[in-house]
Structures are given as structure tokens and as C-alpha cells.
Length: 357
Ligand code: FAD
Ligand code: NAP
Image (cartoon, rainbow, N blue to C red; front, side, top):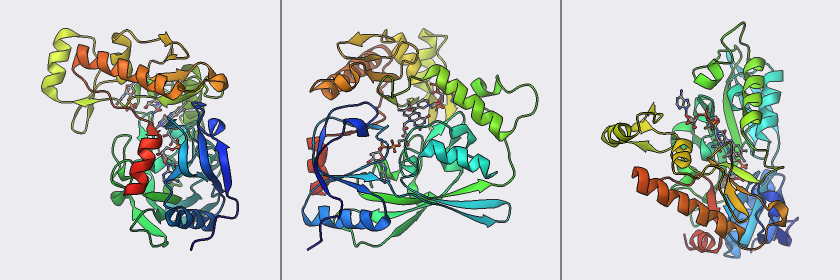
């Protein structure tokens, strides 16, 4: 019988562990500070037939209800650099704070992360979402991840998945599909450049950098300032960043929409044409609208927020998801586009599915 993890806690409030500040309780909770803690938590939850939920910074989740199993808060730290020719292989613990990692990499003269500054959360969650911003996705620098399989196929051995096996897509990966809640990442290996090569294709960024020298620090600072000017800080107004993914539609559908809406923005994307979800939400009349204690931000229509903050009462997650459903229904009716929710939703129903697998 697997022993209980040494720092196991019970009935832990999760409001401060998710950036939407949704109230929810974990039946059991472990802050995993080492790979051994992670392995012990997986073995124990399996032996107890308890569903396991891994949380990093909680910046891309909607906690819809109490978690009846074990919540593992990822806190495995560590950074190791190996120089390989003109590159460096940077191995980082999954619990490392992503933004601090970006800042540190620049101080070490390692390049490739500068466009991804100020994204909340942990390094271990970055491959789950294939985080992306300002023209760069993690895909560009990810070498591999290491972690443990969860569920019936678990054998307690550390497994390495190369970047191709992670099946990274647009804000997507195998960890959101076949391996959702079935693989715990404990280490991420990044291939960073030792010589800086700017990526400034993104128009909003390029417009601010068209004069003078562009170095990595300037890109990082510019992206950071752009983000701070546009996005609400979750500490001030609890949110989970973009609530919807940008949909990719086919050329025929896009032509129909453009005939009716000549100003519709669009970008070429693998598999079709990407239309900014923010535009669809705004044109559906939702920008800045509040429904009780939840609402759509008035400057950034992809951001749904918990306006009651830490004073939120029970059911706020359901009200948030009802708001999302109302927006999805309007966008579907007006544009025949299905908006997909970006954050992972967790509650009793997902917990049951997690254990049954
Ligand atoms: P969590 O929210 O804790 O977890 C997210 C999912 O990953 C869950 O399903 C969880 O179980 C799983 N997970 C977490 N850690 C692990 C692990 N170690 N092993 C296996 N599974 C794990 N995203 C972008 O892509 N680009 C952006 O520009 C961006 N901007 C944002 C701005 C704001 C203000 C906010 C609030 C969010 C933003 N996001 C953005 C979304 C979010 O920050 C990222 O998805 C981030 O990578 C989530 O990290 P996290 O540690 O908070 O993950
Ligand atoms: P923005 O610059 O106002 O642009 C709106 C949308 O247009 C973005 O979603 C972006 O898609 C798309 N876009 C713009 N230029 C593009 C180009 N040259 N090629 C392809 N797509 C292009 O966006 P914003 O809301 O201020 O966000 C800025 C960046 O930060 C974006 O990359 C966004 O994804 C990222 N961000 C993500 C989150 C999150 O939670 N996921 C939250 C905040 C910001 P992309 O989204 O595909 O880049």
C-alpha cells in the first residue's frame, strides 16, 4: 500500500490557488516540492482511487466545484543549463514561475523567450497550452518534457516525451486531449539560442520597434508594457486571461462572413483562417457587459472576470460559465462560429471521469 505523502493536508481552500479566485475546496492537497513528492502523490492517489488534479499557478483553470480527490500543487524547482554549440539546453522544474524564468534567461544571455514575458503560471503548464503570444509559441523552443503517467498505465517511472510526441498545436497539446489529467510534467527542457535573433512579425509589436536597435531586453520590455496596458492584473481583477480561443474557420465560411462584415479581421492559420475571438465577442455586444458578479472586461473582450473577487459567493463559477455560454450562443447565432473555452474546467463531473479512466 502506498504511503500517504509526507505533507498531505485535508480540506484546503483553493481560492488563492486560482487566478479567477473561485472558491472551491480540495479534499486532499499536497505541495509537491520534489520529483519524489510527485511520485508519492501519484502512487497514493491511485491506491486510494482518488482523482488527481495538478495545479501550477491556476491561471488557466475554472474550478467549478470542490475537488473530491487530491490536488497536487506543482512546486518542483530547479534550473540547469547545458551549452551545446550555439544553443543551450535549459532544464527547468515544472514549478518554476514562467515570467521569472523569462527574466532570468535574458540575464543569462539565453534567447527565445522574450516575446513570452509576463504570461502567468508555471513552466510545467507551458507545454499543456503551448503558450503563445506576440508571434511566438513555446513550440519554437521546446525540446522535451519529463514526467509521470497517471492512471492504469502508471508504473512510477519517469517518461520523456519529445516535442513531436507532445503534439503541440494552437494553444493545444496532447496534454489537453489524450493525456489530459493523465501525465504529470515534472521537468521541461528548452532549447534556447546563445545568439539573439528577433521575432518581430507581430504587427502590434513591430509598430513599437520600427526605430533603432532591437535587442532582446527591448522586446521583453515592450511586450511587458503592451500587456500591462491592455490586460487586467488578476491580482486586482480575478481572471484567467483569454476565456475563448481564436476560432479557425474554412475559406468559404470566411468569405460569407466577410461579405456581411467587410471589416472582419483575419489571419492565415494552419487549417484555415483565424478570426480574433475578441472581435466576435465585441460585435455580439458583450464587451464591457456585467451580469451580477461576473462580466466581460471593458478593454479586453476575451477576458471574463470575477468582479466580486475574493468575496465571491457560492456558484460564481457556474455564473461565469453561464455567461460564457450566453456569449457562445450569440456568436454562434450571429456568425455561425463555435467559440471554444480555453481554460480547463474542473468539478465533480470531471473528477469522476478522471478516476474511471
Ligand atoms: P494551471 O492553470 O495551474 O493549469 C492549467 C492546466 O494545465 C490544467 O489542466 C492543469 O491540470 C495542467 N497542468 C498544470 N501544470 C501541469 C503539470 N506540471 N503537468 C501536467 N499538467 C499540468 N496563455 C497563453 O498561451 N498566452 C498568453 O499570453 C497568456 N496570457 C495570460 C494572461 C493572463 C492575465 C492570464 C490570467 C492567463 C494568461 N494565459 C496565457 C493563460 C495561462 O497563463 C497559461 O496557460 C499558463 O501556461 C497556465 O499556467 P498555470 O501554471 O497557471 O496552469
Ligand atoms: P491583439 O494584439 O489585440 O490581436 C488580436 C488577435 O489577433 C490576437 O488574438 C492574435 O492572435 C491575432 N493576431 C494579431 N496579429 C496577428 C498576426 N500577425 N498573425 C496572427 N495572428 C495575429 O491581441 P491581444 O489580445 O492584445 O493579445 C496579444 C498577444 O498576447 C496575443 O498573441 C494573445 O494570444 C496573447 N494573449 C493570450 C492570452 C491567453 O490567455 N491566451 C491572454 C492575453 C494575451 P493570437 O492570439 O493567436 O496571437
